[in-house]
Structure formats: structure tokens, C-alpha cells
Amino acid sequence: KIGFKIARYGRSVASQTIQRESASVLRVQYISIMSATAEDYVPPEPTVKIFSDASTSSSVDFVAALDIGTSSTRIIIFNSIGEICGSAQAEFQQLFPKPGGGWHEHNPFDISSQTRRCIDALARDAPHLFAEGRLKGIGITNMRETTIVWNAKTGEPYYKAIVWDDVRTADIVSRMEREAPDGLGIDRFRATTGLPLSTYFSATKMRWLIENVPSLRKDLEDKDGERSNVRFGTVDTWAIYQLTGATESSTYVTDITNASRTLLMDIHKREWDETLINAFFGDLVDFPTASALPKIISSSEVIGPCHSSGALDGVPIAGILGDQQAALFGQAALNPGEAKCTYGTGLFLMMNTGATCVPSTNGLLTTPAYQLGPDADIVYALEGSVSHAGSVIQWLRDKLQIIESATDSEELALSVPNNEGLYFVPAFAGLFAPYWRSDARGCLVGMTAGHHRGHVCRAALEASAYQAKELLRAMEQDSKGTDLTTLKVDGGMSMNDFLMTFQSDILGSKVVRPKINETTALGAAFAAGLATGVWSSTDDIMAMWTAAKTWTPSMADEEREKYWSAWKRAVVKSFDSDWF
Image (cartoon, rainbow, N blue to C red; front, side):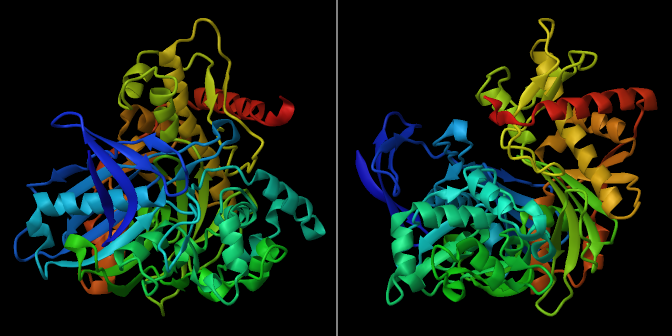
């Protein structure tokens, strides 16, 4: 056994004991910083890909993107003509301490150490991509809303990261909804934030942490001591803190797109709102906004260089975008009325509304899409969010174990001629847009003894298409009749041709997949490249976007309506889960 410490961007984090069981297997006995118990955990090795057909000649520059998602983290390096030159990706551990209660956590150090391992692995296998002077900048994109709180002096989190789809704060939401003035309910903060009151957003998670973590509450009340060292942040803020040394003086910022998902930012003024902060925390603590919330900056500006970050040392961090805004930007949906749908862990449909901040009356979110520089205008968007899409296929693989890999779902779905009356409503964490029903739970509706795993896989895939249609209908109503004839798609599930065919059919619209499907990382790279001069304007970005495949609808209107009305009836069956 060899005792050692994992490097956390130049600092040690968690004691680990490694026992070599074979030449290729290391078993890590991981001692969690937030738990007295040890758990067997083997951090997966990064998967490195080098794209030899991409240009790496001296005439092109490189831009990197760190893309930290819900289940994995990765670095992708693009060249200045928009090609992927290399990537490294690694999963990190998913923690479900109360599965029946919908709790979902990550270890912040697992995220940061796996991110560092990806950087090191790509630098080892493709050092030419990190050559001095060639890598002009790095953009950060991340799962939004996931909340971390740590002490800046010690570098230690007070608790694990509470993930965006965690529903432990349902009671907080219910109470605040009941107490809303003028009967506003979940819309009590919508005029300022563009968001409904929901377990989804960061502020309710922050309140839970203050209520339930004694050491955090103690430090927040220590006005002459540790109070000034408490740092709340989303994953972008944590990543930048790590990339800039993880010390008291490390950079503490977030961008407008991530800040807007906290329920604490005024989306019209681009600043933290003390009225909102007092509504969430005023009865608990005198919240130190100036030190405990990061500075809000634009999505595209030079923030500062990385240091204590291995191969990225000296490379400027120059862009931050929440993952769905990054995908919109990477899809070059830069004109009002253009939209994209990302099929990842969840499903996210977003439409650019330009400089107009469009309020939703149909259950959507009004959100900043991006701001290209501190003096630039804010570009807004309407967004519909669905909590479970690709994660449903993971559930079929890991929990039900009816498939061995995600790609099996397409083959099984095609093994049956249609769903034969089976509908899958994946309300594992309630239903997000357009319903916002935290009481909803997942259900299979219409099951008979004749159904088999092929029908279940088909119903699981079709569920994403139905939910996308619900969002698109709401979006068309909010945007006053804008008829979206073409939907740009991306994300892992967009590679499933069965799903994209059904999506086009159930929408009755064209569906287009881009040549570069890694649009989230590409959007972050674009933001960083604009700030560092790799690209001079958004015209350069739009010129690089090309389509790879287009689907056109072939389903008859009568058949489309039959499936759609049955789905709507199935959704209602998921409501009021508290009956048991």
C-alpha cells in the first residue's frame, strides 16, 4: 500500500490509500472529507482522443474548453477554424445518500481532481496542443445550479455539492410558496429573476446548507473571524477557484448566465439583489453578500491566467457560460427566434430573444443567454428545462439493467413497430417546465403483459421527444406566435437516429444536427476566443457552423395527434405522488 495525497491544483486534498491489485487495477480507499466512513471508489481513468485530421499547423491557434457536466468532466481543444483537435474525458462519482428522497450529491474534490487528470492526460498524449503561445485561452462551461460552499482559507468544502436535480428542498419551496404575497405562489420572484420558485435553483440549496450544516452556520455568524472566508458558488466558480491556485487570493467570480440560475440575481441589472437574499436567508443569518457571493462578470472577457494548474499554467481564463447557454452559442443561434435543444442528462430547449427580456406565462424560464464583454448588451433567451432525458437511459442500464450500453436502447426501440400504448413519464425529480410539479414522480402508463424491454426502451426515448414538444409549444406561445420550422439539436442523445426521427415526426418540423456535436464545449471556446482575439466577431462563429444531418417529418397528422393526446393523459398520472 502506498499512501499519498491527490494534487488539487497544487494543493493536497484528501488522503487516499492505494493498493495495487494487478498491473492495471488500482483500488482507492477513499476517505471522504465530509464523512467519517471509507467507501470503495476507483476514479475512472480519462479517455483521451486525438483527432489527426484536424489542422494543427502553425497558421492556426488553439482555444480550450473545460466542460464540467453532471456525470463527467472533460477538456476539449479546438483550433481557430472550429475543429476538435483533442479531448480527454472522465466520469466522477454520483452520490445518492437518500435515493427515495431524491437527494443527489457530488464530492467537489472528485470533480476538481478528475478535471485535473483530464488536463494532464491530454497534455501527456498531445503536448503540441499546449505549446507555448499557441493555446490562447480557455473557456469554462458547467452544469448550472449545482451548489458548493467552501472556506477560502482552508480550501475545504463545508458539505458535498448539491446537484441541480436534487429535490431535498421541496419543503422549503412549499413553505415559501405558501407565504408568497398577493397569491403569487411559485412566481413570487419571477419579475426580478425570470424564474419560478423551485428546488432546481441554487438559493433553496443554499438555505438548506445554512440550516443543516452547523460548521457553516457557525462561520457565517462569526463576524470577526471565519465569516469573511465563506464562499458560495456554482461549479464554474469552484473550477476557477481551483484553476487559479485554490487560496484566499484566488479568483472568485461567476458569469451572468450562472448567476441568473441562483434565484438571487436581478436579471435586468446584472447584480445580486438584497431583497431576494433577505427573503431566502434573512431569518437565518446576516448574509455577507460582498464576500460570500462571487463577483458577476460577463460571459466573454479575460479573467486572469491559470496557475498551479499543470499544462494550463499561464493560459488566460477568458469565458464562462452555463452549459445550456454555451450550447446555444455553440449552435450559432445568435439571432432572435433561433433555437436549439440539448439532449443530455436532462433536456433543455432554448430560444434567443435578443435584447428583449421576454416574460413567460407558459411555465418557461426567462434567462440571460450571454453577454459578450462587460460593456456589451445582455442577450436574453426563453428556456424550457426537463430534468431527465439521457439519465433515463442510464437508469435503464444501471438500475433496471435491461440494456448493457446506451446504444442498445436504439436497437431495442426499433425492434417494435410502435410503442403499443406504453408511455414513460420520467418524473424522477418531479416535472420541470412547463408544469413545475415537485410532487410528480416517474411512471409507466398503459403497461400490459405483452410489453417487453423493447417497448420500455422505445417509451423512454419517445419521452424526450414529447417533452421537447411541450417546451416548444410553450415557447411559441410566449414568443407571440413565432413558428419554429427548424430545431437545431445537440448532446449525446442527438446521436440516436431513432429519437431524432421521432422528434421530427412528433413536432412536424425539421430537425438539424450540426457537424460538431460538442456544442456546449464549442460555445465556451467561442466565448474565450472572442475575448482573446482568436475570432474577431460573431460573424466568424456563424460562418463555421455547418449541418451534418437533417430529418424531415413523415408522420401523418392524425397519428401525431393520437400519440400526443395519449402522452398528455399519461403526464397527469404522474401528479400527486404523496398519495402513498
